[in-house]
Amino acid sequence: MKKSYISQNDPKDMSFRHLSSYDFTYADELEQKLIDNLSSIEALEIKTASGYLGYHDAVVWLRASWHDLATWKTALLQGTRDDFDGYFAARAEFFANYGQFLEGGFDTEIYDTIERIIAAGGAASLKDFENTVRGNFKVYNDQYKEYTEHVASLAKSAAGSFAVIGDTATGTSDLGNNPFKQRYPNVGTHANIYNTIMSRQLITPTPRWFSWLVGLAVAALSAFAFRRIKVLRERIAYGLVSMVAVFVILAAIMAFTGVYVQLFVPLMTATFTFLLVSILRFVFSEQEKSFLRKAFTMYLSSDVVNQIVADPSLLKLGGHEKHITALFTDIKSFSTLSEKVTPEQLVEILNRYLTLMSNIVLEEKGTIDKYIGDAIVSFFGAPIDLPDHAERACLAAVRMKQAEKALNDDMVSSGFTPMPVYTRIGINSGPMVVGNMGTDNKMNYTIMGNDVNLAARLEGVNKQYGTWILVSESTWKATNGKFLGRKLDRVRVVGIETPVQLDNILGVRAEASGRQVTLVERFDEAIDAYREKRFGDALLLFTKCTEIDPEDNASRIFLDRVKGLIKEGTGPDWSDIVNLTTK
Image (cartoon, rainbow, N blue to C red; front, side, top):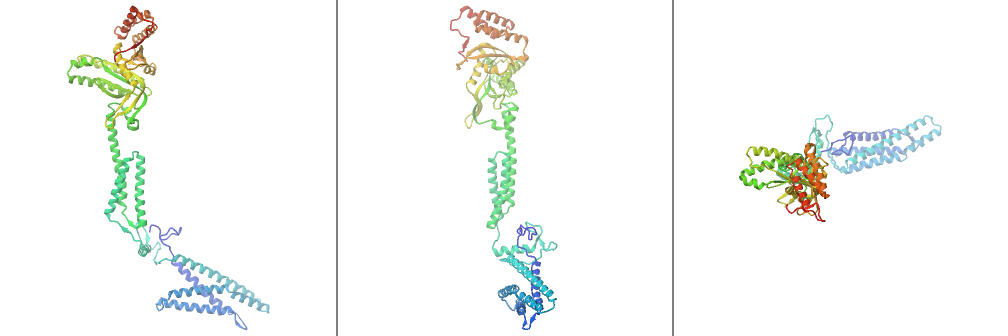
């Protein structure tokens, strides 16, 4: 019933084989023409001195046979006889004999007779008669052929079938609807019902609760699948496939077993599950992103957090080596400060200080690793790549010292702290292992490696030179001259054998004062003289540095060292490399 009851364009696209009533009427018309042809042939009455030609007896016999068949048919229709098989066998034999008559050469006998009469001096008009007879017999043969082919076609269409007679005209009112067609001939519905009963292809509907059970199973399977599928595009594809699969599977069950499961609940369950899980995943994803933003903003800049939220794969589990820059800070004389204030005051001072310094790190897209008491451990260049990570770390250090001055002015003047807070900073760039490290239950996104340890050591080395910002040579070279800085010693720090060139950053070159620039120039000249053992020149240059900036601790330290070397002298194995014994 899904297909049309009748299709004029494609006979295969029909629910049933359709035979029009005219097909049978036309068969009757052809049949009557054949019988009428027998009367026409008999009416020729062609005979010789010996009597009628042979065709005459054959036609008389065929007409008599047809009369007997007509009588038999009437008896069958009236119910006085019931030998239908015998009747149809006799009909078949009659039309077979009819065909043999047309092909048996009886017409040739007529033509030969007419030719002999003409040859014997008969009227020439007999030739026209002969042609007429020839033409008639050709028509008789064509009509017989058409009849036999038409009947054979009807027999083939009706073979092995049952017949339901009804009206299928589009203008009739005998049309109904079904689940598949809005206007379907009722005769087709009757045929479907009869076919179902006779073929025993009955539909077995399942209870409604079974449909709900299937729906729950579909919902559970879909929910499980949707939870495992992370990509929205894949979830949409699975949702569409699942709905199509439910329809196809249930339709196949009905087609092959006759068991009908109501489609609405399973289909709607698959659809609703897809929509519900998608909505929930969206809501939870937004909550998760919001949580990530809130949590990571405490350690990363907002720009970095947005990139991580957009692509969480940037935060890979486990560590990997990456060239980045580490920055360590520590407060000078923090123990002294903690002795002068109450624990509550200390916490307030420290929170205010750490907030200010951490914000500066985050503004430069740095990552806060951890807080160790008053110290900040941070790094630049992970998890998001920063090509200028060394510059950003150094700029953060400079901004920390500038912010520190304003913070001290405010806290000391207001009595919030009994002493100012001064920060020492160590910076180093190099290959470091960065990633989530720890256990499955407790992980920390951190950095490890020798270059990390060096940054920590440089922060402590500031004590030896009275400086505030020390960077390694690798970091200094990566800043491309953006900062104003000077060379100090080459040192071996505790735990690291390779000598490290120390560079002391004083500020951003574009922001530096003329006095700072002059100090750096003289100091670099003094360091060169010192390393070349031109201690007299070094003494004069370092003295000049103290005059330029009397509060410059590094200049005074080197000045005292040169004085000692001039007084005590140096051995043949003297080296400018300094071995530090304390952290």
